[in-house]
Length: 183
Image 1 (cartoon, rainbow, N blue to C red):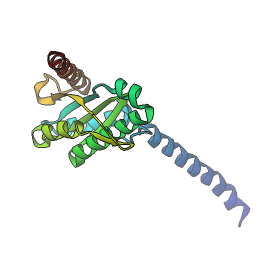
Image 2 (cartoon, rainbow, N blue to C red; image 1 turned 90 degrees about the vertical axis):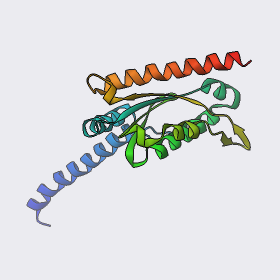
Image 3 (cartoon, rainbow, N blue to C red; image 1 turned 180 degrees about the vertical axis):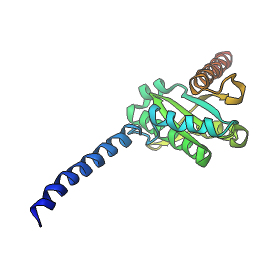
């Protein structure tokens, strides 16, 4: 090979490899390593895009109920299995009409193009299906808060997340009151 060509190609090859490594690191940073869902940063970018394109979009916040108890009783591997199952169920429910993410811990988030078409009851039922784990059936439950962007004065993701969070805590509060009164 001509030394002049090699002098030009070697640095270009180095930059190409470096760029590829950086692109891989960025993609990895935008995915939760346990569940494979988007992290907050990766999900937020997709959610903003969905909100701009779909005026009937909705944001959901999902929090697993009694997750600490599951971890303490059955171990962290069972907790990880519950997180993975929840992620899989949320991802399947979103399908091509939305994007799911994991905010951290046992909190998940989703944005869908149209909540009316997405059937929230199906998601709730899926999130409450028991988890087969180590020859046992572990109970799973989740509280889901929703915010339809059309209900906000200005359809901004941060406001939608805050409204979905408040709705989720209201659901969580109702289920706790309900479980106390049934004892």
